[in-house]
Image (cartoon, rainbow, N blue to C red; front, side, top):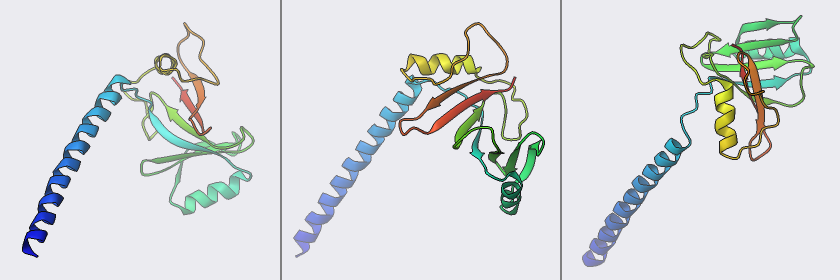
Length: 162
């Protein structure tokens, strides 16, 4: 019985080392793949939500601890923050919800020192064969946005404000 237990322990150790070694190899391969795709800096992330009633939604998210960062009832939207979490609640501006990135802004809506211009991001995405639903005109500068869908059809907007 002791020999059987010893063999089980030995097999477990060998298998464990093999799995660890394989996991380390996979981590290295994944890191190399990520490096090949570049390090795009997309800026602050928020979830843009299309809401039916701006007042009810604002109150609801305030109860969850979110505070207004920007927007107004007159503008039909609010950008709200809770720690590093950002949401935008929008009434009558678009349908569905959108994952939003803002190059050049941090999570507090403040300008970052450096950022990847939306045109650089567009160029990189197109180079990787990613289709864009809305593009920025080449040769332009300043505020602009691009829109794309992930493989599951979720809308993503990369919206640069400066």
